[in-house]
Length: 409
Image (cartoon, rainbow, N blue to C red; front, side, top):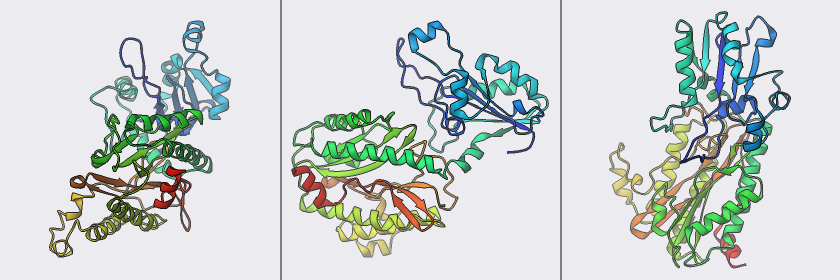
């Protein structure tokens, strides 16, 4: 952080649906990371070089009243917010403008938060962060402005011990959900029925929400990477791709499994599944300190390419003579296989940065054969350690024999 600057982070908006209904609140993850506060209408101000000690960290929260208490329930008191965040000075958010004015002209600039995720989607909606950026620049036009995201994307990829525990808890709930789902698969069941089994375990075990809309893709639906309407019937003889995650205390798991509708993989399904599982087992070994992400993805692509040849989907001679800018494997394997995991499912972090101890990555190779109605992807979550990695989802069944046995037990 550049000296003599003030950092200000704001909470997310509450998103509305129609009439007086709202979507569930999801906190700004940078704000949550730095404060632990999971409440709307929150601001965090950090000014390390402030002359007065009490101005170096200030948390602003919403002041409640009897009307809010009756209709929405209790909000955090100043004492509760201080205990959660470790910040001694807590003020009401309606006093923010007055308080920041008292120190703004001592500072040379501001760090402001904004959603800088590579997969950012806003649909041209102005966010709380957008409004604060506009307000600051109108109020203090001659100050210098900097980006909080450059700092937090350096910090957040390395998980603390407590963060790893929360990620493991999210994974453990996912594992319970998968076991429950296995017991309820049968020919002609609906995809949304299986989604409901995951939802049951999520809520029962204290999960906040699904990490993302679960993908329950039976048959050819599995060849659409982000299929999640989940409204089709699961037919006898088909395979189901289940890509799902649990958000627990704002930390996420992200796992994928494939299972046969009738409880037994066909010969071809076994071939494809075994090929993808081989890529997962070998590829995950590459997730270790010092690995360059681009090199990892290149080696993973080679693993999948080898399996596509063995499956009879690609010809070795054609591959030897292919245009390197248009690799043939992309017909059957068209996505990356490792992303940061944490407060975001696709967590922040630069992929130009080498893999380091304390990071958490997914590993998710796949093979998709639309002409055969088969799509297979397998995904685990890995904590990077000094000597390699630890599979946080190791207890989720993945071997063919184990899955078939559980489905028939």
